[in-house]
Amino acid sequence: AQSVTQPDIHITVSEGASLELRCNYSYGATPYLFWYVQSPGQGLQLLLKYFSGDTLVQGIKGFEAEFKRSQSSFNLRKPSVHWSDAAEYFCAVGARGGTASKLTFGTGTRLQVTL
Amino acid sequence: NAGVTQTPKFQVLKTGQSMTLQCAQDMNHNSMYWYRQDPGMGLRLIYYSASEGTTDKGEVPNGYNVSRLNKREFSLRLESAAPSQTSVYFCASSWQGADTGELFFGEGSRLTVL
Image (cartoon, rainbow over all chains, first blue to last red; front, side, top):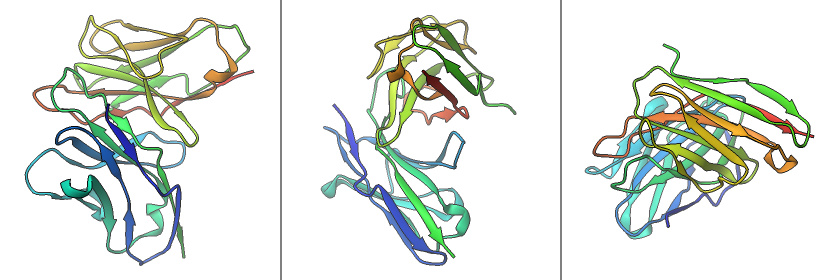
């Protein structure tokens, strides 16, 4: 069965500083990988996704993530954080094939941005 | 462009009461999902419907039932609510083709069971 680990429950960064959120997955083959962001009281919005090809994927709001097969990781990065990036971030893994997008989510990392 | 719409947004129930959460999507997606979100546990899949006319259990289906009413609508029913079902419920939809499609989420329904 697939699983996702987000080792950092809470991260605080200063506005303008760089950010890296960690995500490790467990899956028997090459998975589909996603990062979602959730603002308070809102649903989840897709930041970026990896299906195949280039292992460095670009997303919305200046985020990027790199798929590293050897480390089973899909870490999310942003070079300069803005106060509006404060939210909860979820990594998710999906199995290839099948008839539905049964994504497995990590437990989330809450990002706090200090001014 | 409404996307995924859930009702109600908030609900308080007493133990043993029943209720139905409604979900509708206007993106012509074929697959729909119900997740619950609990602190420190991320999102867990309750039930999903890969296509109209089919439903399947997810990770935490006990205490819930679902109905895929048509292509647009997917409801979640709690027959006899329990305090352990206090949670935020999210409906999502996706276009499932050859590859896993991204999920589009509603804004959530916060349920409290006393």
